[in-house]
Image (cartoon, rainbow, N blue to C red; front, side):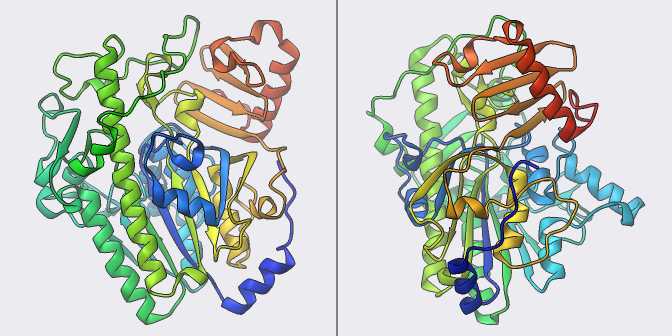
Length: 473
């Protein structure tokens, strides 16, 4: 085990006993790297997420299980390692249909079985709304069977969930990506983009749940800052003249790595410009990404304000989670899908009644799979024995704990991140080892000179995932 499992601290046990079963508000934000004020990025305007961090505990070194939406959300919603592709949850759903007893309950299913009403709004699983089919609206193909009492995705003028996922202002749907702008700034309300509608639906659900009074597990998934980088114009204004910090290590790695050609970015219309070669264009793209972060932050603020206005904040665990990071030019990548730090590190903030180590942070290495057992402990629910992670509650009492490690994977490689190093094993046999105590971090591969450390970390990785650790299917 990475960390010991502790009982609830007395002060927390007492608080929960007074309040009863706490509600859960899980806010999932797509493609959000730790590009936030509370993570020390001073040019970013993220006042609402920053305020949440000031009232809870911020995890500086939280790592996802996969640098892609579907596989990362599988880990969040099952508490286990899983397939490395975007259809991980659909594969689980198919297995559940064909062999029901072979599939463990999901996170929302577990809470549902213990008396919670579970509601999903927006992009919580891979498909916004949680359905399959050509336009992601086929109600016969749930992405997470037996998990949610309601799954909601208001599509407005975007016609269907697939349209909303990659939509630009006022119902523009991605058909031919090459004809859709890679960024946009439209002078209109929040509801000109899909996240405004998602937030409106979440506010309505909060009002209903507050009136009914039963414990709830409400998951709200915001799409931005996912590509294309479109947000209301007012969120771009603060960034128009801001001086951006230089892009660290912008060169393509020379040796074996998980570098890629940023095809997700370049499928959109970038007007023949390439941010890898055009510094001015790179700055414009970064500013639009920042605008999308501020737009998402505004939606988070609306959710938290409603929670407070309904008198629910004192008995609601709030978790803000980014499903993975995103390269903004580091290693000459504009996207995710690598096993570098930029793709795998994402925000994680937990708040309960302003009491959980309010305003503190921890440098402990933690994983997305730790969220399921953490919520079980906070809600005083039994913890399933199939979970791969460990409760983070000990961090609330002692933010100095730092003996963890994090595992991540994609289809051709697997990585383990400790507090000092990152090891990446490729299915081809290539090995990368990086020293995070050095200023060179992930720019210098030291695997050839540290065979003992490679062996030690490989053993840890395989002990956790099994002999096929170098490739997830």
